[in-house]
Image (cartoon, rainbow, N blue to C red; front, top):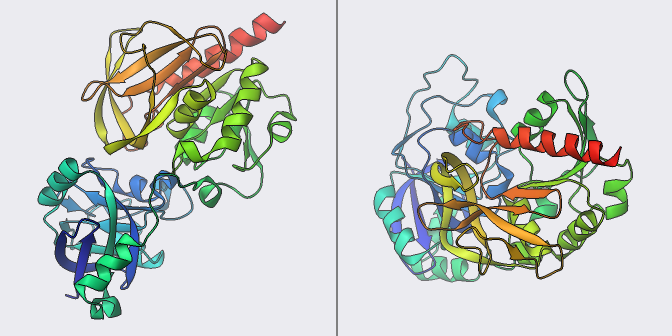
Length: 380
């Protein structure tokens, strides 16, 4: 097996074996705690610019298949595993994970003590890192560390344009038409669109750089901001666009990055989490029902709502009325959802479309349908 090295920004080094393409890659290193759904993770555009560590020790046993892809390619900057499966054992498999990484030129490393690595990241926080194999191993440790420390940081980085569609496209509703949704693609996953069209919603998907006039040209019944990578503080244009949507009182729903942009549009701050939430086993409390949902996450930033910790409504600093923190993470009390009480707008920080599961939060797409129907009745 070919040697590979994982170099962290703080100088910590992990050695292992090359997995995927030989070469060099850089990115923010983060860990994902899901025991399944590795293909959905790899093809989630929200992971662009990141080296992903899988905490589950055994990855790749079910191979890969086209149906489980959340986009047209693998987006992670690098991949870190402990024990990649040597064989593929699933009737749906169309290829192996290692071959898939090579196909998309993803540099990875296996044989790493991912438990020790994850414990280090939980303590020190997410940071820049690099994977080196092949000819890049000719570099000294000092040279590798200089390369890592000279790479870009996630804070202040805008990545939506890199993962968004370049042209607008539409997907017809299934069954009886309920309404239309204009989607701003900041890194959308296919499952999100599938959930909407299955509920009778016709969707039009627009590039991240779309203007308000373009997004609202067809008079949609609702606007949706998708998940995506990068720092929400670097997305001023999308925040300004969303404020126009809110001013027109058009129903709005946002997921993940869309939740952060709603928070900023309402006048709240966003901040970088120490190591973020990534995985499919995160407990979230729905304050409206008192139920705890097991949810899928992928975010390194969050919204700060001063005064909203108890669930009491607070005033939007931008003048959009009362806002309530609708959901909170039970592990660390991070804001996981926002609800506007004087506007038809709501959002969640997690992923209700999670294809690999869990499916506790699928009801949020039904809530979007309810908001659209209520808005139509009110406007009639």
